Image (cartoon, rainbow, N blue to C red; front, side):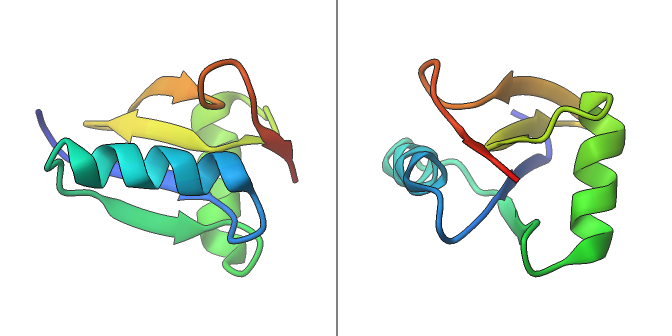
Length: 75
């Protein structure tokens, strides 16, 4: 697996679930809170084409998942 990034918010339980899954699988990742970090929010929106649903999982600059198991939180 290449560089992995998780875009989410502290308030979103699905972000927490995906974070836990990544840790359980032993995957190293950088995490960005798009509610607290305007630059991270801008990057996420650019990557998703404006989709405002978190969590967003990105690998090597490519979105691989929006939401977690069909669920997510809107920002």
